[in-house]
Structures are given as structure tokens and as C-alpha cells.
Amino acid sequence: MQVKDILKNCDTRMTKAVESVRHELVKVRTGKATTALLDTVKVDAYGTLMPINQVGAVSVVDAHMLSVTPWDQSLLKHIEQAIIAANLGLNPSVDGKILRVPIPMLNEERRRELVKLVKKFGEEGKVAIRNIRRDENEALKKSEKEEHFSEDDRKRGEQEVQKLTDRHTKEIDTLLAMKEKEIMEV
Image: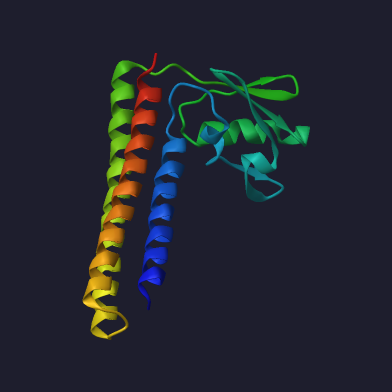
């Protein structure tokens, strides 16, 4: 393997680790309405469990309200039961042909718990990035021993891997800071 191939692989894997953290952070409730809150909800429709966005349109009404408009009105009760069963702390209510889902305000204690959870996700992402760095540095050393390139190339490669590590770690820190700010805002 060439140094550029190892660096490309490293960047790809680290980017996936950052995206994984971003995906986890989207799921954390902040007291503001976002359609991502219902992404994990599965509705029993037509004898199969389906994601909520496949049985209706989920939209944000305002900062503290979501609405779900089912494509088949007979699924209204099933959607309501699925949201309650998802144990998200949400209480949907049927309003004619749509389902309204009020997003309750978070208390201070719950906000602090969520910040801890967010930091945990961030730390897991950073650990993943450090593990990728270790793996890629090992790949560089192995390729050098197999005489695919020189020691100088390996050292330059290790420096580039460290730059990638620093860049992706900084991305995670930025994501965490934004999410923490979002959670703590009243």
C-alpha cells in the first residue's frame, strides 16, 4: 500500500466516525422540535414495523410542536401508540386528521444529564478516531517494512495521520459545543 492510499483510508474512516457522532447528537432531545426526534419510532402498519416517516409526513409546527400527517388515516391510532411506546417522553394528541406532538421544556437537571450524554458520545467518537490513527500508523510501519516506501515517507505519513486526527477531533469538539449550547439555552 502507498502512503496516499493509507491516508485516504484514514480520512474516510475518521470522517465516518465524525458522522456517527453527528448522527447520535441529532437524536438527543433539546427541548426544541426537530423531526429527527421521531426517527427511531417504528409504527405497526399493515402487519409490519415501519419508520414513522414512511407512514406519514413529519413536520415542525413551531419550536415546541411537531405534527404527523398520516398518508392513511386508519394509521392515526397506530402512530400515536408507536410514539408513546417509543418512550421518548412525548405525549401525542389526535387533532382531526393529524397528530400533534408537543415537545416539553427540559428542566435544569435533565439538561445537565443530556450534556453528559452528549459528551459521552463525543468521547466515544474521539476514541474511535484515536483507534483509527493507531491502525493507520501500524499500516504505515508494516508497509515500510515490506519496502513499499522509505522511512521518511512513513514519518511524513504519520504526521499527516496526526493532522487528520487533530482536524477530525476538532470537528467533534465543535459539534459538541454547538449541541451543548443548544441544550443549555432556555
